[in-house]
Image (cartoon, rainbow, N blue to C red; front, side, top):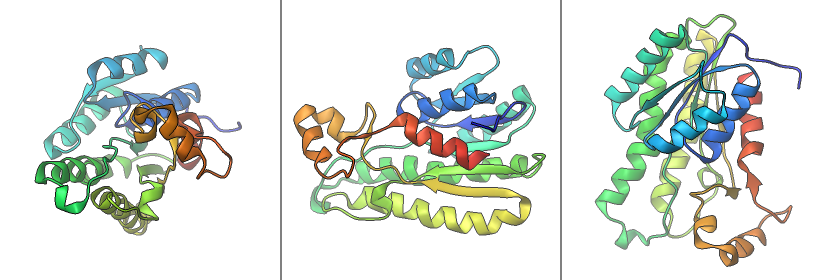
Length: 231
């Protein structure tokens, strides 16, 4: 790998596990200083330790709150001196519900975290990213279900399709400010909150039949793509 991120600061939401943790570890290995955020305090501490700990910072923050996102960005810049990259990884994985069985609380939970959280963090970060020497970058987390659909996942699909549209619009809006905006759209990834993983080995085996390479992807493989998009 020929690129490094020494002297750069990367803010990662949803950093306590899965893709967020793997990306934190990847970026730390490539020299970045990290601002790590999640609502899972113990998981966040574990991620920080696995990334070397001392030079990084952690903050408990609910990305569904615009004030929490504003405070997180302000704290990052105050403590680490700058902001170059944002990985909007915080999200809620879906549960299969027919629309008639979907509650307002479930709708609000997915919308507030997956979509509003991406919006809140992006808006808060823009003024600081625009000052980054050599340009800055945002990577948002969509899903294969932001590109295709499945019955009983309407609300999750709605959030992830919206992130694709949001990302494309932000790429056009922020490009002139030298801020690149992209999205990753993971498929079946072996993470602790993946529905198939939670359901157990039989469910995973059924899902693996739908995957061309015959196995789940790994969080590290997604992290490789995110790091590439930051370079």
